[in-house]
Length: 312
Image 1 (tube, rainbow, N blue to C red):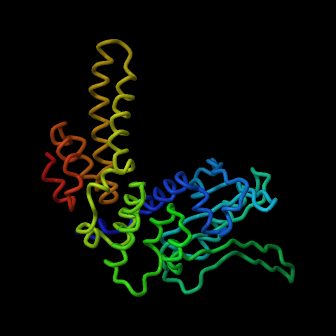
Image 2: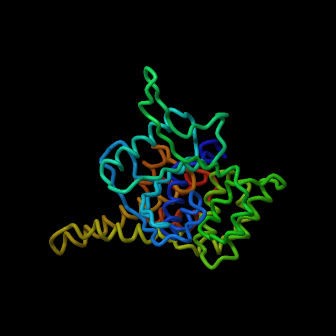
Image 3: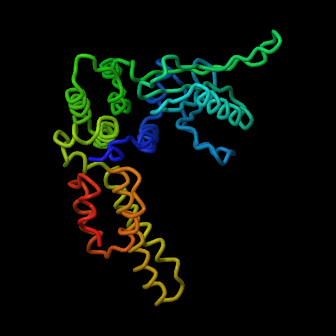
C-alpha cells in the first residue's frame, strides 16, 4: 500500500465532526463545557462566512447556560503545524463572528493528534511601548491526552468515534482499535461504528482494521449508503435539465452516466484519498458495466492498482 493511501485526509475528519454535530450537538459541546447537559438551549448554527478563503466553522452553536447566552465555536485540528498559523486562523474566525453576531463568543481548539510542537499556544498577547494592545485567548483541548474510558462513563455516544484519538497506554494499536469498534458495535446507531472505522482507517491505516471490521455492520450505516443514493439523485437531476421529450431521455441517460462516474470517484476518494488524474480520466472513459463492477466490489479493493484492473 502506498503512502498516500495511508495518509489521513483532512476532509475525512471534517466529515466526521459534521456528522457527529448533527447527531448530537450537545454531546460534542461537552468536550468544552462539561455541564452542558444543564443548558437551557443548544442550537446548532449553520453560519456562512463572508471570507471566501476560509471554510465554515467546524462547530458553531448558540448556547444558553446558567442565565448566559453565548456562541460556542470549536475547531477540530488533525495536523497542527504552527502556533502562528493557528492563532491567525482563530482570530479571523473570531473577528468575523464578532462583526456579524451580537452574542459573546467562546472559542475552543480541539487537537485530535499529538503534534510535533512541544508548546501549544492558546492565544496572542501583544504589548507595544508598555501598552497591552491585544489580549486574545481560546481554550485548547488535547484529545490525545484524554482518558477514553472516562468518555464511556459520561455516556455521550456521539463522542465514541473520537475515542480513537484518545489515550490507550496499556493497549496496543490493534487492541485499542478493537475496543473502540466493539464499544460502538453495541450501540443502536451503525453510523457511529462507521465513523469509528473511518477515523481508525485514516489514523492507523487499513492494515490494522481491515481484518477486524464487521462489514455487514459497516455497510448498514446510512453514511456508507448515502454516496449510492447521492449518485442516483445527482444523475436524475442532471438529466432533468433537458427540455423536450427526446432531449429529456438523452439528458437522463447522460445524467445517470455522469452520476455514476461521480459516485465511483466519491467512493474511491473516500477509501484511498485524492485520486491521481490518470485514474480520474480512466473512470471518466469507463462504460457503465465497468463502473458497476467497481461500485459492487469497492469494499474489497485494497489499492488503486486493483481499481485499474476494472478500468479501460
